[in-house]
Each structure stands twice: as C-alpha cells, then as structure tokens.
Amino acid sequence: MSTHAPTAARTPAATVLARASGTACAALLALGFSAGALAQGTAGAWPAKPVRVVVPLAAGSAVDNAARILLQKVGDSLGQTFTIENQPGASGLIGAERVARAAPDGHVLGGFNDSIMTMLPHMEPKPSWDILRDFTPITLAATIDWGLVVGTQARVNTVGDLIARAKAAPGEIDYGTGGNGSPQHIGMALLATRAGITLTHVPYKGASQAAVGVAGGEVTAALQGIATVYSLVRAGKLRLIGVATRTRLAAFPDTPTLAESGLPGFEFNSWFTLMGPHGLPRSIVTTLRNEVVRALADPTVREKLVAQGLTPQGSTPEELAQATQAQLVRYGELMRQMGL
Image 1 (spheres, rainbow, N blue to C red):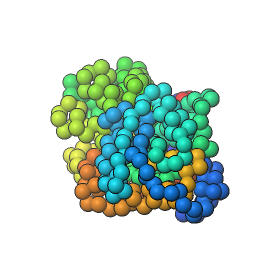
Image 2: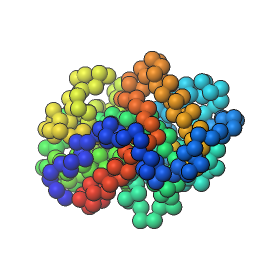
Image 3: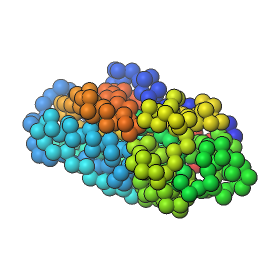
C-alpha cells in the first residue's frame, strides 16, 4: 500500500459535482432515463399514495438522518407521507436491489450514499444491479461532512496520538465501519495510507452500530459522517479529534481539521442522493427535484442539516449523472491502488 495520499482523498464530492455539466444527456441516458422518461410527458397524479424511501443503511446513519429531515418537508409540501424504510445488509446491496426492481411509478425511491453508488460496485464481482443501468438519478441533495472519532476511554486525544500509537504497534489499533466497501472503510483506508500506518478493520452491520462500538470501547476509532456521531459527541460518549473538511466546522470550532493535524490536504465527504428505479418518468423526477430544492431553501431545514454536518446541494439529475460516472472511475482507480 502506498504511503502517499491518492488524489481523490483531496477531492470532495462537492468538487466532483461542481465539475458536472448541466446538459449531460448522454450520461443521463446511461444512468437509466428511457427516451420516454426524457420526454416531458405527464405521469398522472403523483404522489397518489404514500412514498416509501428505501435507505439501505442503518437507522441513525448520516443519510438516514438527512432523509428524515428533508423528506418530512417535501411530504408536507406535496400533501403525502414519505416513509423512510431502513434496509441495511450486505453493505447496501439488498436495499438497492429493492429500489432497482420497484415499479417506476415514483412510490418507491432510494436514499443512497455514494458508497452504494460508486464504491460498492468495485467490491462486488457480480452485483444484481448496475448503478448506470438500473436507476434514475433525481438529485444529490446534500454532501456529508466527516470526522475522526475515538471512544472517551481511549488513550488518544489527538490525531497525532492515534498515528503515533499505530506506528509504534502496527495493526493493533482497530477501527469500526459500516461494512466492507462502506465509506467508513474507504475513508479510513485512505487516511491510513496517507499517514503511513497499518490499522485493523472491524466491519459492523451499519455506520451507527460502528459508532456505538467505538463509544463502548469495542474498537478504538472510526471515520464517520458527522450526522451519524453528532449526538454521541454532544453527549460526551465519543471524542471528535479531527474533521475531514477544508476548514473547521462551526458546530465544533475547537476541533482541528485533519489537514491541520499532520495530514496536509486530506479531505473526505460523502453524498446523500435520491434515486429512482430505471424508467422513472421525467415529470416525477422534475417535481421531486424541485420540491427538494424548495425544502433545502427553508431556513429551518437548512439549519437542522448544517448543524449535523450536512451541506445542502440540490443538484440537477444531469449533474448527479455525470458526477456518478466520474466518481465510479475515480474510486475504481483508488481501490485498485489500495488493494481493496
């Protein structure tokens, strides 16, 4: 494993999104829009019944928290209930398959992170679905800020402490993740590569379970979405020793960035996206994306998201399509370099 930081460790998802063009029709077609879906036809009255949003991650994860905050407002605006259904397992494969196989009528959607979309496909030799073929992009609703946490009982107070201990005893420091190929796994592997240390990976069934494992002293550390660990940090059950953002977070002004802590240029974040099954009518996609943008503009919604380390985005479907294709290539190269 190289001791140099791969380029993508310093390329946050928001940067990928910013590079996406607003008219990437070819990319959009590749990501599941049929010719009929591209047409501005009607899809009837939508939503005609409660909408189920499958989150293939554990309750309490960053994506789960973001989905509940945002879609409550969207549902209120549309006059229909949006129900979050957590379906963790197999690092998200099972829940994503449920969305891929759903009827394209807009009543079953997916709340995905970029691990499911652009990391997991490189870990599974024969997944039952293809992110570029079996789904319709709707919007990248928010990016998720990340931080490095340790248990309060750990003999680690700074990032420097963690690195020093890992160098003194390679492999003895362990870290918890939401599973193989999860963003916690990829992010911490990138951090270890950059720091030139060897850590032991301990996969859990979900990100929130991994956070509880750190708080309980089962493992030493974790790189997590701030929204996942926010309440545990505020309750004094986890110690946030570094944030993987370009600048310090307003919610934790005394916590240094990882770049300040001996890892120059290191940044890492993840996505909260809304996706539908292949062939979702364009009228539904447009309505939903517009409602998400409207909800993200609401001061109360924005305040709740930002407080938990989430940055509102509200991309177009075309931007999400191109960002997904670009990040698939980027993470594929990274994971091969790292032997994952």
